[in-house]
Image (cartoon, rainbow, N blue to C red):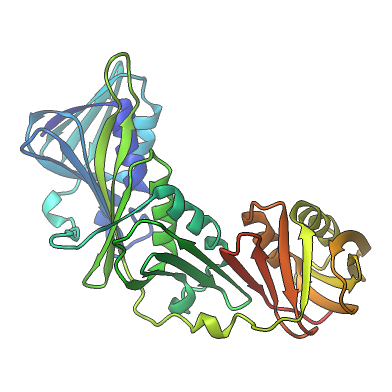
Length: 380
């Protein structure tokens, strides 16, 4: 096999696959990227950790057909370090020469036939999603995905389509995030899937390139995400070069918790507050809170909330923030980090906080009423 790619295209292909290859696996082949030529002259790059797979067809000059697998991370580091221009990859048995300019590297590959098969979409029915919409949904929910892989039912994001409504929900048991986007266009299929945390992260990376619509479909317990991504910027009169990229993630089989039961109803205390002022106050006061609990107290009175903390090993701190509130006084404690995370993903100038009693969760909403965040209280 012998192929020639621009550094920009080569690096782009490896950036999208090396992050998926599993360097910690006992199967060495899983830390490799599969590089194979296609009859039409393009080159396919593919990687998998058996749960998450990615493959893309990239523009190249194919001088000799063939296929090989190479250490993904090592190859990516080599390509990134090489001078600008064209890079040649030449295979002779399991020995591979990578050269560009005056740089020359020799690597040992593994046979392509040992590489696991990558799921193919086949007859999957795809629907379109605007990449900006999907990226916003992930941004506003990914922070509350549980990192506990022993609890698979919450180690991912619930993604649903219901008519013209797209919904994403995540929880780690201490907080919950839900966003619903109502779309004008018709044609959305009804679906419900739980996408694992790593899959959500790779989908977000995939959305950062260009404005092309994203195609999503599911089959045999996997979700397929397909789109054209820019792999080489436009030069002179030549348009930007694009590659068809497909990401495949196995879905979590465990049932997502009944999230509607977690979102409190009928909260009788409504607070409207400047998001930035509350965010900054929480960050300042939490500096002296306990490293373990990050506990802060909200003392709510008409027109203001005092945020305070008392740490016997360090000291204490407090700050008063003006709010729109005319209900009865109350005190309630929270983990400051949980509140900061929610406020950090919202872009409105003001947010709505709904409360009930000192042992009841807080509900945080945006003004547009598309986002709902639930933060569990703590005793302080």
